[in-house]
Length: 298
Image (cartoon, rainbow, N blue to C red; front, side, top):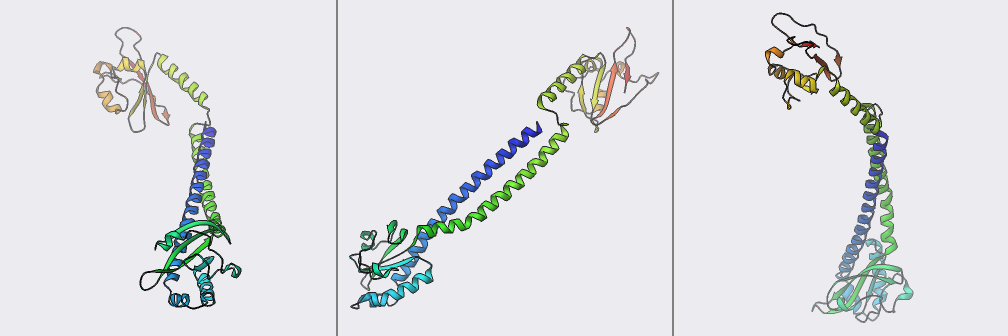
C-alpha cells in the first residue's frame, strides 16, 4: 500500500510541478510581450518630444539630421528600430538605410488623429511589435509620426533567458516534494509493517472476529488510562454503556456495580498485567457457576 501511495503522490507532484512550470512560462511570455509594448510606446513618445526633432523636420533634408539621432537613440533605448516618417507614411529614418524614402509598414490613421497605436506587423526586420505616436507642433498639429519597436524574436529571447530559472525552480520543487513524499511513504510502511491493503483488511477481520467470539471479557486501555476497546462479553459482565470508549478506566470502573467489580471486600483476585504498545489488555472471565463472583485476569 505504501508503495502505491508513494507512486500516486510522486505522480501528483510531477503533474502539479509541470502545470506550475507551464503557467510560469505563459506568464513570462505575456509579461515579456507587455514589456516590449510598454518600452516601444515610451521610446516613441520620448523621441517625439525630443528637442531638435521639430526643427529637423522643417529642414530641406530631414533624413540627414534625424538618421544619426534616431540610431543613437535606438541603441541607447534598447529597441530594434526608431522610424520617423511624414504624414503620408514615407520614412525619414530606418535602421536599414535602403528603406529610407519608402512607405512605412503599419497603421498611421490613428496616430494621425493624435492617438498612440500599438500593433504587431511583418515589417522589414521580420515580425515586429511597434508603437506609433504623433509628432505635434506648438499648435498641436500633427506634422510627422515616429514609430519604435522590437522584433518578436528578441522578445522571445528574453523569455528563453528566463527558462533556465523557471525550469530550475521546477526541478528543485519536484526534487523536494519527491523527497518529502518518499519520507512519508517510508514512515507509512514502517507503521503498517509493509502490509498490503488486503492483508490489513484480513488481519482486522480476523482480530475483530476473535475478539468478539471469545468467552472472556477483554478491555484494552491506552497508556493514559483511556478505555480504547471492550468486547461484547466485557460489556455484558461489567455492564458498560455503549459509549464507554474514550472514557477513563477509572470512570468506567466507578460505573460498574459493586457486585461486578474485580475486587471484593473479602479477597483480592490474582492479577497479571501484560504491557503492550497501546496499554494493558485486561480480560475478565465470566462466572463459572451460579452465584460465583466474576474472576478477573489483568
